[in-house]
Image (tube, rainbow, N blue to C red; front, side, top):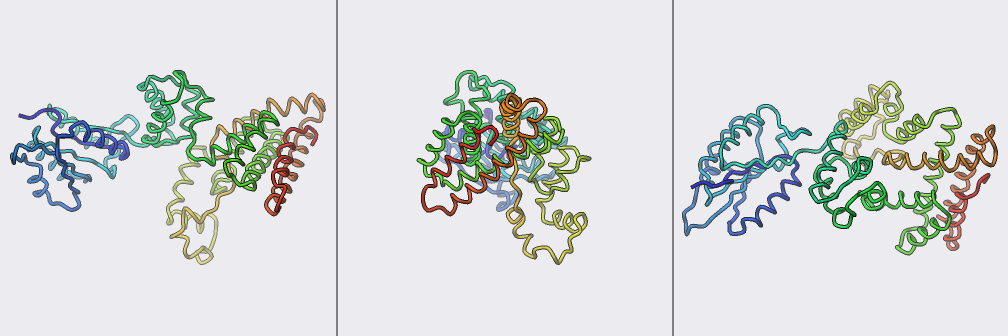
Length: 412
């Protein structure tokens, strides 16, 4: 007698698929497991392996890894479904994500029709883990974050969920993993501040955010965090480079704003800077989502070659002959703001904090010019101090203190 499910198909995100299999194995711990790779087995061999074995009444699960996108493979699944039972269960796992799943958890018409036909069998289970969200599917990704936290008894507001996506990214399995990790220590209501302080894809981004955040607050909080970084073994020159990068971006913001741009256009400009290729990112005739799609295409060596020769006008022989083996690592991108919320944070401090102080001190006529002059002097000062820290044999901590002090001097 067959019981549900004796045949399981696992598609979508492979990391979530692996997690499902681990949980399922624990759930039916009394079964023996046999693994088959479709690249190494014939159709007949797989059918024989999936037939019920009555030897000593042992129960088994046959895991078939790999998918083929053709009618013959779908017919194989249908044939094997007739061979399964509670004693001999079969799992087909699309570990290479051959079946493409959209944000609405739908496959293409052919596979969707096949899955719907299989669902008519009472002993069949489809495990659809979805796929990564695309840049255009950010709204769907945010909804997924909201629902994932809700399933764990947590609530997160829309703004915090949006920041979460900017930090963690659009890969479905990473989103779920981070949601589960944060839910362990999060309050019942999760806000923007909790996300900013607890979810980061790398320690370098976390360090940049926290140090930048402290410089926007007070001298005492900055020095306190500085000492914490040093006590944990962070190199002082590396710390100085983060402060210098912040000084550079504040100078750029001041320059753009003093030139007459409104804050929204200042934001758009600084988010484009430092990204490869600049001829795409700095083209005002191309929409933001199209810029990202075009730049991603250049990760392909052949597309990059065509771009460099046909668009940029480089001779083929002038290109690095080994660039095809290095692409993705040999292209050194400029310093850029990795996440939009970091740009928002810097602009907010310049607009709501620094400008107010300059206006109060210098009046309506001069505050923009003084803001720019001040930011240029601060950047040059930080450049010199960072250089000194790199070559200094002693007194490096005091030089860092001087860099921090420059952030709290009006008319520097």
